[in-house]
Length: 273
Image (cartoon, one colour):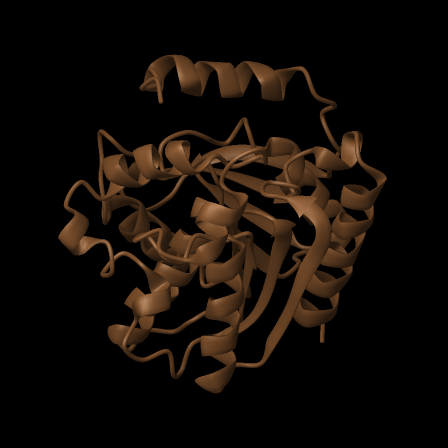
């Protein structure tokens, strides 16, 4: 594998995001600063207060930002009637593990949201932040929404080899990104929610995985572990879809668009219950 240039990779991702439709117009979208000056973007579907969802974007811990996931956050806010607070957390390689987890946990303490959500690497950060708060005896959101989440940074699940070539997420790229975020292989279990010794007391969860995703098996396994630990888990594996389907694949795939509708319906039902 040719080693990517991180700066070029980030810029390319932002440029591609800029070519896509903007997403729904909302009552208010504003950039603000959270704890320790952390950049956030607040999406409000109406002027009346709605339940807040803290959102951690995907991007393999290395790429992605407020711009790349702006459309996704707008769509969640609009479709689910929630306020979305997107976190521009610190990324590797400049800020390796556990910096991004600390950022998301700080926003959860600051915002006291109804839910925390994330796709891919953001799903890992969302649930790891909940683990941090639980270990500290601090209040937790009622719900975690994890879409195609990283949960095993050792990359030892069968789907990494089975689906890591010819699909949206390449195993070589995944290995490169994980090495940037967790440079010491000995510490990768510590960064992996799947290997947490105890998952009791964690929030209820909506976990959606994809059939043709290198991260499929670890997401499925984490859903089982959370349920075994006592969380109420709604888990679905989307047939025929690949990693990252939540990120704009609805524009080209009717199957992905239908999966988005199911995701939004589940978030709505579980937050507004």
